[in-house]
Length: 288
Image (cartoon, rainbow, N blue to C red; front, side, top):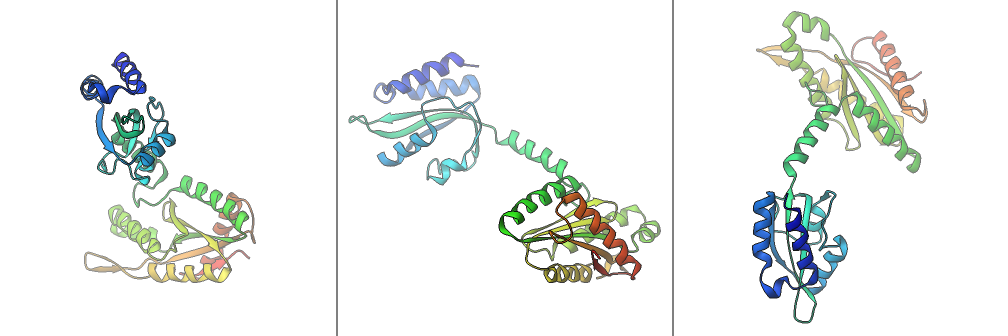
């Protein structure tokens, strides 16, 4: 759409005569009408700034790839256009003064923010549990893989916790699936509430959760986190004025002490969780 008009505009802008002849504004408006693009208007800064942003983005050419709009904002440009964050296709020109020094930037762009937001939503749904909005197993696997790479680089440890809710099945059977879903959501919030900054919680199926705590220095840190999680989960869940207590059993594995492969560490934590269950409700246990 309007490809010839785009070519004509770029040719005129690159010759550096658009500002003097005053024809650029009309052409920009015409281009927007034909292509559905958004006019950026004229942005004025001092000569050094204009030259700097021109060097950064090779302005005066059509950009065929998307780039993040905040990169421009980081350098103080287009500050008034906070609603446009991502650029898909951009035509930008440079205005020069009589000394042939760049003083103005002008252009049009296509705003693809809505499309990117839709893509982000689809990606989020693919990587998160629909019921609790926690990360899912796919997300957890990727996170653990990246955490292992960082641990290798920095010489730190990772704690992997496999969590299984206690008494969930009889509660679900007694009160119904809707109550069970509410309880799972409540459990997710209780787990998230005590996580440190470098940790995530994921729901990996049924009443099972996985916590990955990176940047750990010793087992004691993981043990203290396990105690906080159990303490939160044994707090009664209030449903129709009735207190429901669920609790949890936790199994923990440590990287690199217990293994170096993500899948092996998760399996070891799972085994440790079953050993914890044998010791009674609301217990945690490391890999033995």
